[in-house]
Image (cartoon, rainbow, N blue to C red; front, side, top):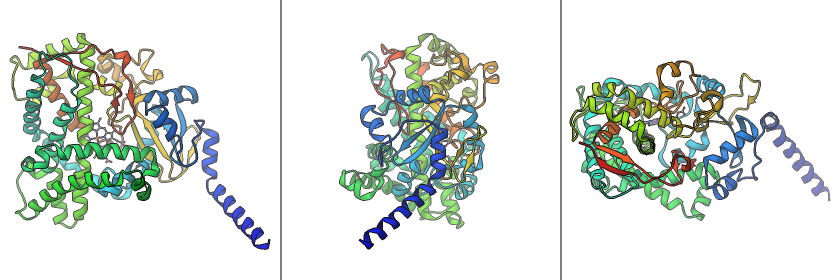
Length: 492
Ligand code: HEM
């Protein structure tokens, strides 16, 4: 009996201690409304099983609870916002420089740490180390790779002429993967069988899907549960398929003389990282992780951007005609022309269209950060240390308060200089802003414009799919529930 009372007292003590430790969380719960989650699973069951990860559920919550609400990712809370003022406070704050560990942990466990997953203190140094690779002068040296790979893509698209509507996401992702890999680990990768037969690409795609599941249903990150549900072996297989190729290229480079000169190869992520390794400034396992993660960050985002822009232009022929007129002025003859940086600068209207596509269908729908310290917002709400804040890029871009009543409509004029000047600077954030924004944003714009220019100068695209029927799936990279088919007609 005495033992039972002692156990009860100790249990009660720990329960009170547990509640006391979470007091800031309960205060947050009182300040921010939101849907309640189940113990351990959070909102995952409702989200994944009943709503198939559709974006409309999040929008419904925002309409119900307000522009900033509290949800549960597994057992952990996440503040989600579509308010540009809060986005600005978060993205500019040094207290929110960490990417949410809910998102980075699956990558860190299978791949290790790189720029994408590092915590603020180590990240700052790494960002400085990697910045030179993304300098404008270096990016323009990637143009031959960008040009060559769009030509490869166009031979596939050309075979679709006269074949009716075709789903093209896979072909476009293959283009962006080949570009991302060669600009990151060098063109030597072309010699690898696993690159030629798309094994590495398929492994990346599978791994990103498995990581998405880990982010939303965090219990699958646990190795035992992951084994029980049969995904651990898949994660290991796909990660080693990728690592084998990257490690082989790193070994080859380490066994040859350091490259010198100002060529593109010298400044690719792999060469920059090996350079830092040789100077003792980056451990070897991080050279591999940096290459691995950079490709992951680059290829899906760029591929989705191009695919969604083509889809929207197929739905809105009047805007496609204006793009075509602009391209015809720059490239009077159709065919396999080379696109230079000067040409890209002239594509002013295409850039407006690209921006509008990234507004309505941002390739990354949510930017999840995590507080390093208790973080007080200007509205007085304190987000406790260690809590995730997800900036919902998708719904910020459709927030009627900042985009007007026609926020849902496709209208490239939203990006006329006067309209941009008069808008909240954080109402449009496809690459986010602040210190930890996308390091590859200029690369992404440049490669996307180049690909779109070549495709749209050579083909007229159309679709019978209606804009109103697009249904958005929330993912690390955003996809459409149903991929519209695209029809291709040759232009002369
Ligand atoms: C149109 C294409 C792209 C889009 C829409 C995009 C979008 C984003 C977004 C929203 C983030 C999160 C930023 C944040 O947390 O505040 C991000 C981060 C990142 N992106 Fe991109 N991205 C694109 C292309 C690329 C490319 C081409 C590369 C590399 C070649 C790249 C490399 C990265 C990296 C490494 C990070 C993490 C940066 C850090 O933590 O310092 N991205 N991107």
